Length: 88
Image (cartoon, rainbow, N blue to C red):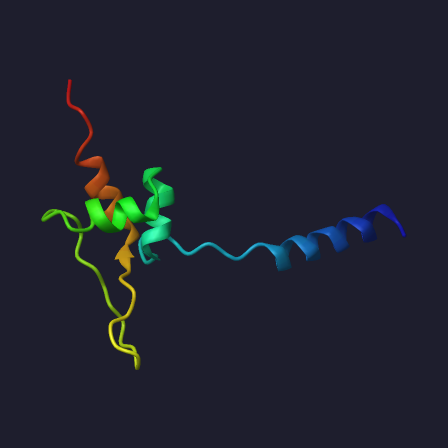
């Protein structure tokens, strides 16, 4: 196998391995993703942050099994977290 063929095989494998990223402007984050972004456990986000009055409102898509898991606009979470930046 030539170097070019090997590189092409590796490139194909990488494309299959990585999901394309969704632009932040349209991405919806779940509680676990918000936890990763904020460097907090998902339970902390769910129990201590999502219940705050100024936390962004959830989006709940229709579900045949009742209440769907909450999703949040990624940009709203980022703006919300940045609003707590210390101002010195």
